[in-house]
Image 1 (cartoon, rainbow, N blue to C red):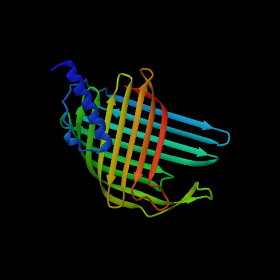
Image 2: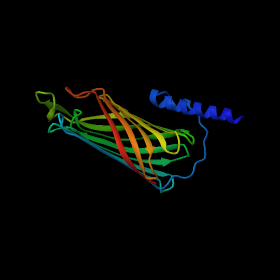
Image 3: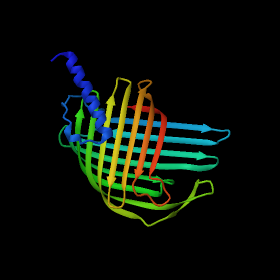
Image 4: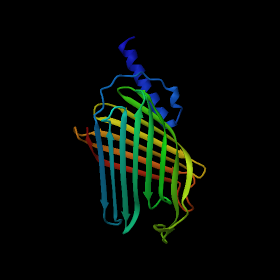
Length: 268
């Protein structure tokens, strides 16, 4: 087999993986070679921070912080912690405030197959839910693993709790308060698809799609980031996040979007 043919085959594999993650096609249809890779570092830390302040006709401040910590120090075990805080203020009123947290532990059965347990929650003043929290467990599989691409798929079951609220707006439509509603609980099925594509030594694309569905509501979250390294430890990350609830409380929007540009610190 010629080197040119191998190169074309690798490009086709990358494109197929990229289309898969965004179109939600069945990952089981993808077959990839198990490419040996060096063992991962025991600890990986990724910290991001961004801040914007504008004064004049509009007085606006926005800030976001994000922290991801991965530990693979023990045989067959992988632990991951993710935290995020988003804040926005305009003309003296707080317009966005959200805290997210996620903890996941994986037990590796083979190089591709693993079991997981996950705790996921958020506290948001402006999306119609005072909080949403889910505990789940299930099976994951590494569908694609090459030097340029990695694709993981997780399927699980769990239980979610959420506290919906009725948002109170002022005369110009700004949220100034809320009224709590009864707590909702439901059994859910969960799906997580994580995809990473490395363009070169300094640039990579990271996308995580998460969905949970029960009889009361379906929640879909996607986090897309393009990371460009400036040095061994620092990078710039452009991010786009979208959250969608099919049945939010009355008066709340179904979709939330967030665009960020952050300075990123990476420690391996």
